[in-house]
Amino acid sequence: MATTTTASALPIDPSALAGLRRSDDAGRPCLPYEDPGGGAPLRCCLRRSRAGERVALVSYAPLRRWAALSGADPGAYDEQGPVFVHADACAGPREGGGLPFGTPGALRVARRYDAGGRILGGRMLSLGEDPDGVVGRALAEAFADPEVALVHVRAVEYGCFLYEVRREVRPAPRRP
Image (tube, rainbow, N blue to C red; front, top):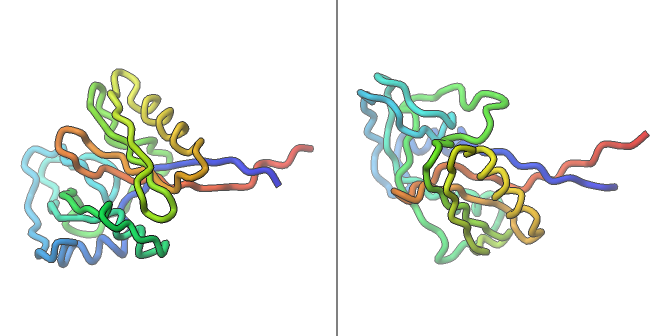
């Protein structure tokens, strides 16, 4: 049976979020606050915060979380860093929301990892005027390599993890 590869941005898993809202991956308690101006990239729902929303800045280890589910051992590639989340449970991302945080002109890096959690390389991205197209092409290029199991998209300026994209293999449509 033929297959096709598709990819979509994944938010932080709701069960991981529940834990992060108590204690983050660095062992610190969650300290919610009201975001006065909005604009924080929320990893729970893959959108920017609105002025006045209650958010929290927590330490998150995305590769460690994925490795715990997949049985991989990322070794030295395990890292943690700051991410913004809603202070309380939210509805998550909306369907068909596209690739998040695609600010024209922003710099991103797409880091590729294999099924064992080892880095296979990365690619610096200048989003220009077509952010979804730039990131979409980088993801297509990454997943053209059969060794790539997931890609982390990060902001270059702060090094923050923005979202994860995992390889999804679906059956190809049958031809009549």
